[in-house]
Length: 153
Image (cartoon, rainbow, N blue to C red; front, side, top):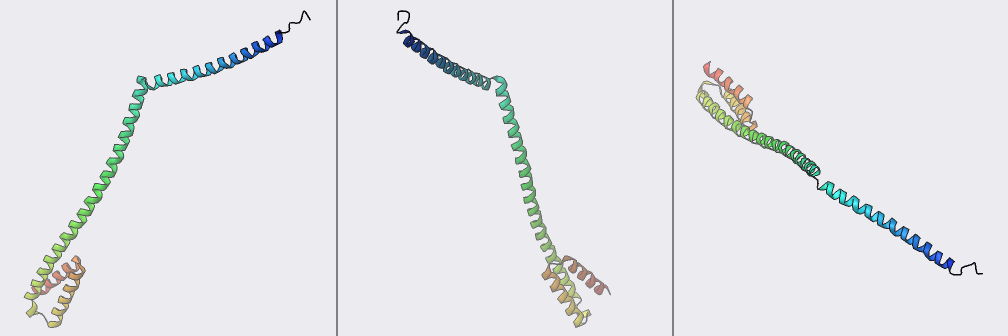
């Protein structure tokens, strides 16, 4: 019994437990230190001039693409509204010309009324009214040529 040290297993158990806990503590501290190191390195990299220039370049490229798309759609919108305006003005102009052509045809019809038989005059008036109501420019022009041919004959 003298050779056996009664407190040695307890002390070795405490020493082993302390070594195990200190190994875990070192492992945890090393992991935290590595995470802090990686975070600091990432923050420094993010704030570096190279990264700032890269982010600025990406921003400028994105803005350029946005402006290009905006220009395209604005140009389409302007073309669309210009086309609508052009069609509206063309329609108004056609109506104006149809009205003036109709008045000229009325004048011509009145001037040759006495020279034509009643049925021919009546037919010409009906054609005139039909073409005018349909807004048929070609028909009115043909009728005017027909009347001028009758007028010259």
